[in-house]
Length: 324
Image (tube, rainbow, N blue to C red):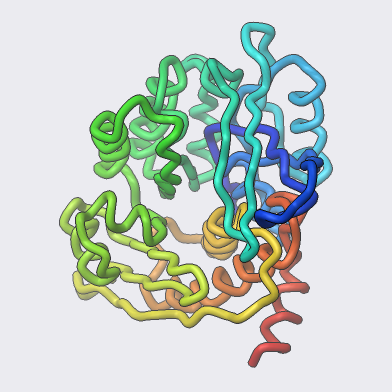
């Protein structure tokens, strides 16, 4: 089994104890969050191996985040502390359906200070799988550190997974965001996007057209998550040079909180990838992993929080049996 290395931000998510417009004076639950960290936590909770590369404040919140990852079983030796900035915070608002919006406090936050010299290239090369998002591309020095990690990993033959994870409130402008997000395209093997990102990045709301766009950009494997409608996938088959594509249906659940659902989807997929000793999995093998990812993502929405809601592989299998 290979290790999945994730790189980027980890922060505190403050989740409201009550939801909806009629909620009283708000109280908040402190939860660990940050998309790349969520992915790592999902991989290990399912039974895989993962390491997280990032930076945290040398404060109570930063110590809490490291503790959460260690409790999950994530390797935190590359999750370093700094006195130069505080740990990032995000206040999450949930509507009655459990869908969320964010208010961020990071000006700057510790995760933005990751240095190129702190990228563990040897560990990434040995692991064989690297996952990144776009938030670490917003500002220096984490921008250069992320690009360095991806470029060097690609040279080493590492499988690179990418989730643009669009958060418009964090970027100085949409044009700068789009320019930055595209910098990863030439290096990644797999991209995961949602409905909003599909339109933003490809100019089309059609999943099939969007996947074709990314294939033209040289990205072999495309996953488009469609909320309750499941997922559209398109995987280029190396043997035939043609895509294997289709839709995996969604699963109806009692949704409490969608925070971390997309990260659970990615984590579940990379967990399956890590269990197979190949850097070029077949399209048909990956097709079978999409169902597992949809199940995992759906389960996460039934609880509050991201990392705290990640299921085990046994829980996913039991859930699968219950919905067949």
